[in-house]
Image 1 (cartoon, rainbow, N blue to C red):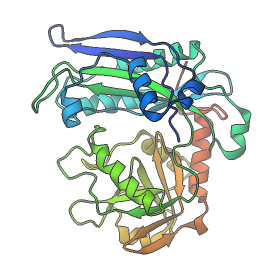
Image 2 (image 1 turned 45 degrees about the vertical axis):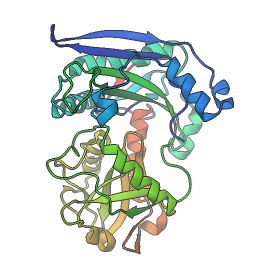
Image 3 (image 1 turned 30 degrees about the vertical axis):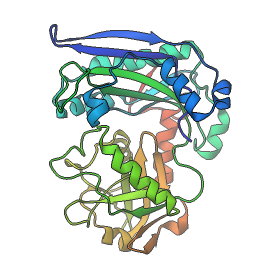
Image 4 (image 1 turned 120 degrees about the vertical axis):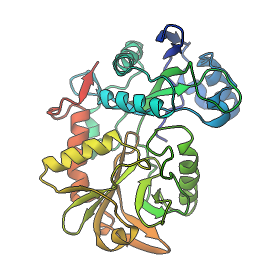
Length: 361
């Protein structure tokens, strides 16, 4: 699995103060529990220990716990060849997090505070020896097995019952070491009848409740022998939207790169944005537009998904209504390989960060 059971011991917590209209900040440090000890415990005991260890004092009854009212971010910090840690584009995550909170009608967390807190989070935990170190062997498979720090900022409401809007939200930053997101085996995808997002809904917000449907659909896909699921639009069930927790790209037979255009049903992914820019640097024509599942099944030669956890992952085929479209003889396509090599190389410091996307610790 991608996510390590052992969360880092230092956690950031802030809460909005409606009286001062500012944010009260503090750092919480908990005792380290060796990962080897955690592995020996059964799931119930392990979860109980982790909950106690990471006791943040958050209310048990809140808009978040009762109604899924909350939002979060996913970010990574990468160990580089030079020995530093590089957080990838935290300014863009800061902007998206603020937009998500605005979309939830709650005070937005300031973007400068977000970036500063994330940098300090990595620094504090690195000083305790928790972050992974660069391994030259990662270069042999283009960082497919490389480790990174997964940073999880999230919003939680104050204690509350009854449907409402947070007036004094919390912002927490925690994290752990991660590896490859997708399990080994095939990279096949299948469409689902489930609907991830509807127009005028919350699809553009990275809010907690959106991921319930995604988790159910992905589980159903895995039970059917597929790695990934593909959502279609709510209105006509005709146009491609996203993967289970990632944006999706298609290389057409004419060489154009197509990804669904942003709207209120598509999450504005940071890796998506970066992929589009890198593809254009390669001289590719990139189209952000509606793409029908029929076009995917007949006119696509390469497919891949992007996301913080997923990175850039090639998809070997898409199955729709019992028919399978196979891409590039089930092998990673040329476009995916080129962009992935550049993206990972910049993140891990193997090549120069000509975009100045990394923030170094």
